[in-house]
Length: 97
Image 1 (cartoon, rainbow, N blue to C red):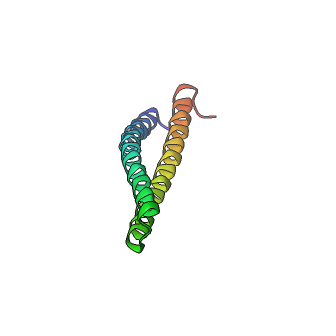
Image 2 (cartoon, rainbow, N blue to C red; image 1 turned 90 degrees about the vertical axis):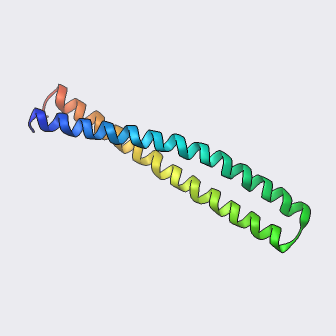
């Protein structure tokens, strides 16, 4: 592969990695808030013992679960981008194997 093509792909991988890490940072902040909300609604549901309070907790809990799953997928995507970046750097520095 041509050096310019490798450099372009490496630059693209780096930009995607930076965006994904920024997205992860935002997602982590959101997850803290959503988990706090889920904890609060759980306590209210325990104290109130009403169907409405229980429903609010179920919704908050589902939202927290979905957000945690999104975080896991994003962490996996970051790991893949890091592997791709390392591979491209190896190919750029060492040359094709």
